[in-house]
Amino acid sequence: MTAIPLEHILILASILFLIGFVGVIVRKNALFILMSLEVMLNATGVAFIGAGSVWQQADGQVMFMLILTLAAAEVAVGLALLIRMKHQYRSLDIDVLSDLKGQ
Amino acid sequence: MNFSPIVTMFYLAALIAIVASIKVVTRKNTVHALLYLVISLIAVAVCFYLMGAPFAAGLEVIVYAGAILVLFVFAIMLFGLREDETQYAPSHHGISMWFGPVTLALVLLAQLLYTINHQGIQQQLSATVIDSKQVGILLYGPYLLAVEIASFLLLSGLIAAYHFAKDVTHGGQQ
Picture 1: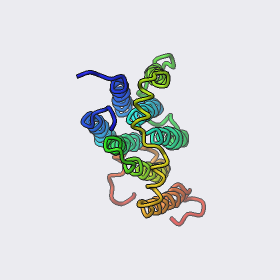
Picture 2 (picture 1 turned 120 degrees about the vertical axis):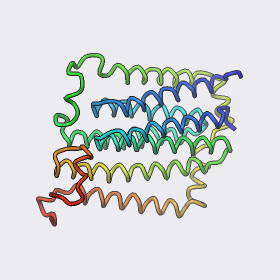
Picture 3 (picture 1 turned 90 degrees about the horizontal axis):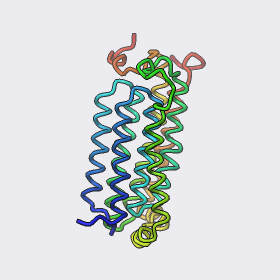
Picture 4 (picture 1 turned 60 degrees about the vertical axis):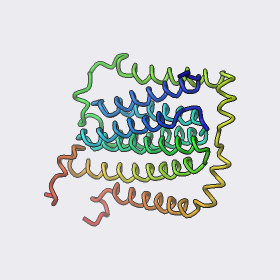
């Protein structure tokens, strides 16, 4: 049982998740959207580690490692897509992607 | 409500993580945001350490702040910074550029040194720590299928990244 109360860990995770969510919604640059997604995934990791440490189970850290794997794969694919987008549209603004069919 | 030193350290690291995350979302310049993202991840790693998960803290620093952020830096170098949002950034390259991240990083460093040297915190942490041995036993026991699926996920990510980033003008299909 850790000395830190679970409520405060969850409040920290919620605030970080909210900041990342607002970033995903507000920013127009696709690179910032990816960074905000990282912040959100990190917040879920905080929640898992906090719960695992409060109940003294290693499951939380196992889930955190799976989240880490997910984040690595997501960033690799996302950045590759951004490189393609930069080549094709000469911009990282997501509004240029609003057409369904390419020109 | 009495604050033990470990809880106070947690609140300080959490505050740094929140401030750095807000900076990540609000910066105009991608490299500045990336610096703040590194600080945010390291602050969260300090939180993990204080929660009694040093293995997760090490993974956070090595994989997140080490590998994934380097991937971001490579991508930003590939994109070329001039055409992005840098025209809105301050043009002077003085102290203001790196003052914020360095200040937050120094606070985190002070926290690290204080935590290592403080006997009470170390005793309290060693009583509650979940070490990597327990995680490994669980990972290759009940969670074996999840590990296999994670390996598939990484392989598919590798293939997708190779496919998408390939230059279509040379040997592509379109």
